[in-house]
Length: 301
Image (cartoon, rainbow, N blue to C red; front, side, top):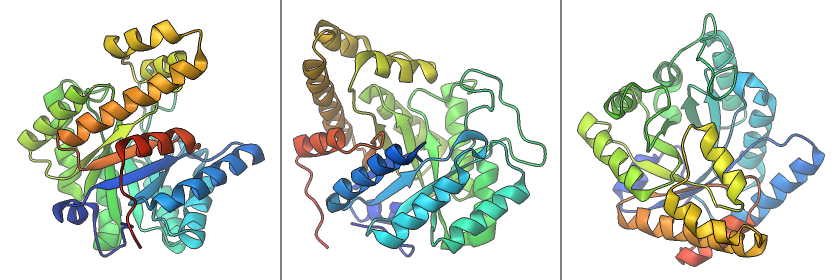
């Protein structure tokens, strides 16, 4: 069911409904734009709860993010959630971006600290006049708009790479909740047990909001290993062992990757996940295949 401004993700979950959502990123060129809108068109009939549009570090895709979310709000039945990061922006600039999103009719924002300006693995350096923590960005958004804007944040099944401990990571999530965050989406879940551990830590810390697991379909072994490396993690050995024998058969490896992702989704839902958030990579096929494997019923209008 599509969410509207009068109904938060928390309220949807509290009503016993699950949320299913898709994530897109701003394309780099016209070919990428065509691919993006093809994916959006193919996924719209699945009636997701919402779709999110990422935001490039340093504001590199700022205008595109606003344009895409505005077009989704204007031309589709889907509810767009715009990503916004602290990276490379003063608080004044962040207010300007929020004004642009408001004019565009976008009422849902993912408030993120963002990756270090120097890229993954480099030291975090705040922008002078800006923010160092996502909780500060949440506070800014809620102070501006209150209930008129729904705010989501990030959560990390294995802990944020800069966290001192898993417990400290949970306390940071609680801080974002205290500032007004209403739901969280994780980075890609690699093991169901990591997600369950996150739920337990969040509950102990008092971060009482829905935490939706992020799902990344495995379409290639090396590409997936690279994604894990960028977040300073490793693919589970059991996943590598299933895929390695298929390394010379891309079609078979892809099929097994879809099966692994489908099994992970089933386990997460059985473990109490309030829904699933699919990282689509601006393509629809893998997401649709997993959806069909899970036999998710498409909501009626």
